[in-house]
Length: 289
Image 1 (cartoon, helix red, strand yellow):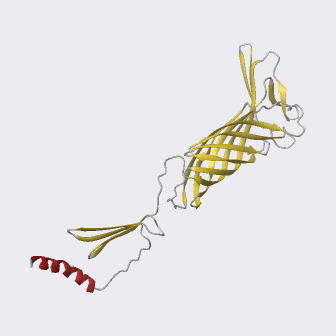
Image 2 (image 1 turned 30 degrees about the vertical axis):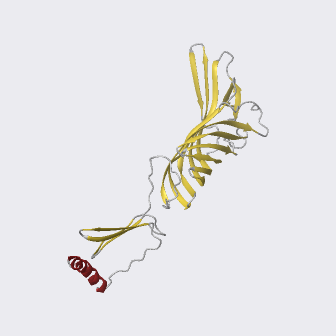
Image 3 (image 1 turned 120 degrees about the vertical axis):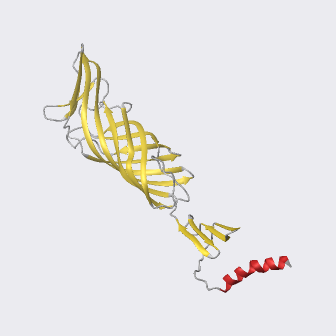
């Protein structure tokens, strides 16, 4: 008899709820997880995720609606790189990263009197950050487009004994150091504000292919360093008729924040008629990308 009374006592509130009007009808398609809990306060239903939003959260308690929450999917972003995440559907996000070191050299082409051997491959280096600041746009589950700003510094070195300078007509030329000069060194230094647009395609897990088109805003000068006796000479030559804006392409692969790249610079750094005609190829490693 006690069991029957207990069952009736439990069924009565449920029957009253069944006969009461339905205020809200909630339909959730293909939920990821459904949790039903019963405690002293009643029966609680918790639904996590659905077809359209894997991070959606819905909670309901018998007799009253406790809370309805819908949160945007998020991804943890540390200060530097951004990695692909299958469940991250955020369209826009902050991008910082792409610290790189590269080596290569200039290839002269055309008629360049006095410059036949002025540049060497092995004496050229570059260092930069592809994205000091930028934004990501997630074009698809496995595609990412990034635009922003970074910086770069690089040198075009001369072979031993060659000094870069300007002649009487203001032309950039490859000359010679004084006969008694020792510890000679000469190079063209280039500092650039770079504005890259990068497309990345995930191939597998954290392995990605990326390709960039880069616009560079350049500041350029030439250096001579040598010693004569106890005197050190450090000569800087400005206004060498460089191109203020150049365009490059870069491509490579990345894995867990470490990558390799090749960069091709089809434009020479000097304006036509004021210096040697050249292009440049460099290759290197990239971190935090």
